[in-house]
Length: 67
Image (cartoon, rainbow, N blue to C red; front, side, top):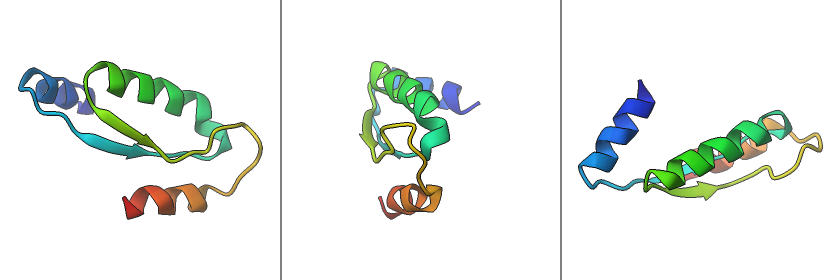
């Protein structure tokens, strides 16, 4: 559903700046999402985490929420 909405925005020439972040368990999915969003024309602010070392997810959730 949200993917369709993002494609509609792209087709209308609307670009968004989207902040994303994750804990260590979601790094691979976050990277795929970042690639997808960039490919359809949106700007992505990747706030981490950037490795699979154990981290506390609230730190990254807070950073995304602040944006």
